[in-house]
Image 1 (tube, one colour):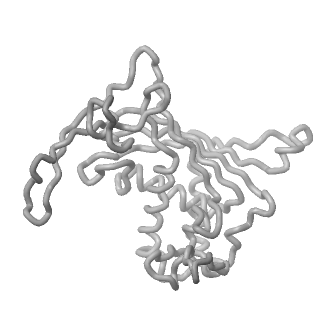
Image 2 (image 1 turned 90 degrees about the vertical axis):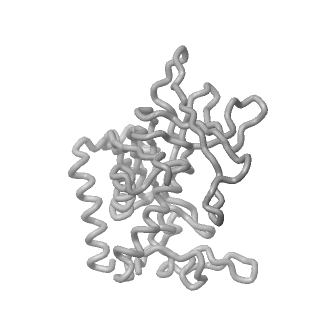
Image 3 (image 1 turned 135 degrees about the vertical axis):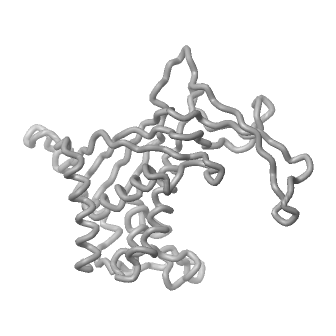
Length: 267
């Protein structure tokens, strides 16, 4: 298992910002819960103060985390290096509570996913901004779609009585900003993050709700990666400007090579 300290927040050693665009390929359902008395539908979409739909950062983080949690046990768990904990097994659970107190988990027992995205014990190394709609024409709102649904009784294999409802979806082609911040991360961890984003691109992961009905397919394009020397935060006049990586394909290959190297060497 990886012998790295997931709680290495005592000193800032690296800061990375990834920016890009999320574009809906099918209808996208990020709900605001049940509609109120003023809503025209039962299940409206989440909107910002200006009335435009947005994707909470927590939703993006959640789908990327769950994607890696599903991938690692099937692909790399046997090597004991890159792995995901099992929340149903206290022996393999990074957030296990013992006697009502948070148990300290040794570094060599902290799984790869929790070491990156955080757990009950350690903070996350990555932070996701809310993905705001990019096409913000205040005089022309984004046309939100409306669909019908019905609750199904799985035992009777038929519709429940009087359980028809309607819900809103964001239309295909809607663009949202993507912004990810990462502190004290290694190339291997950034490589895993890129793998999860690629799964979204390829349709193996989806955003929002009702994904089993065909909603939530998105594409992700990364436009810029900013890798900051933390000394620049305080001594900007004495150091060169932060490096903006323009050869993204080469950078992504470097990150993903670090994933393969970590697994092969067990380092």
